Image 1: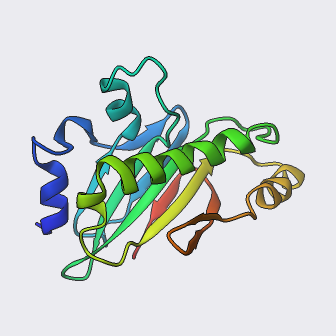
Image 2 (image 1 turned 60 degrees about the vertical axis):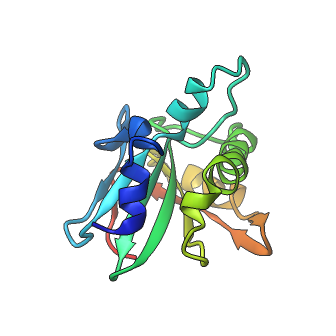
Length: 167
């Protein structure tokens, strides 16, 4: 098992917040059989466990995948079962990704997620929207990058079910 995935699954780290699958309602992400190791973490559960009263909004899941023998990708996933439109939710969705990056990845668990030096983050919005005009609007809503640590992270919009195929 990859050292990073082992560290994430450690009971003293994030084991209590690990999940067996990445799905919510009718939106889901599947992990290809070609990916040999992965770990799914639910940051919402972590923030809720802190009992802050005002729980920070976060993405639904972080899927860490082993790439090669030692490198990892961290896939931040926001799931939306809705099949009509997300036109009024873009600011909330951006906030979920920003909070997860700032308070989880570069915050509470920076020593875990940034332990390899080069951080490989991919951001996904998984949805069930079918109408072409809404799909085009969705792409336009998420053109702006999230800028952190001199890098630009872009939110990719993908239809459910989406399969993580490779690194």
